[in-house]
Length: 175
View (tube, rainbow, N blue to C red):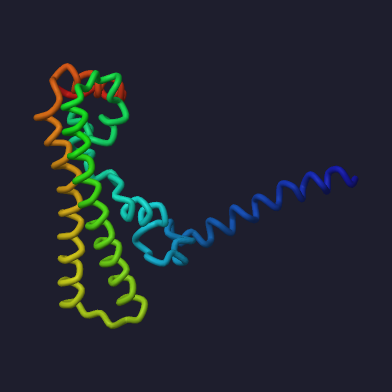
């Protein structure tokens, strides 16, 4: 008699949990993110932006067959870079990195300002539009920094090196 009761209880508990979840089906996919210092950015996002990382902003170039400087430097041997190419790619990378760090820090700061306004409620529709325009302008500059670095490499690398890069990265570049 105890075994059927135990079996019934094990079936009942998950069913109750499911019923409760269905009943409270309004749970946000953002649940847990309310503790973030900047709600619109994860800790990983902030870290990536502050260190000048790509943050996926150059996918339009990368996934259309235009190599990125960071990866090219790591693949220098496989791409048979000449010393001149290596030097030029390093210069592109260092400039990109310096500009990306500066703009990434600015972007994080602007997002933090937006967060602060919503946290303390001193926000109006007009002020919001101005702040959002400034944030998006920063994001566009950041994206330009990364995308333009990919463009510059087209003048440094040969087509066979670009083809090798894409093959090694696992891309099937449309062409």
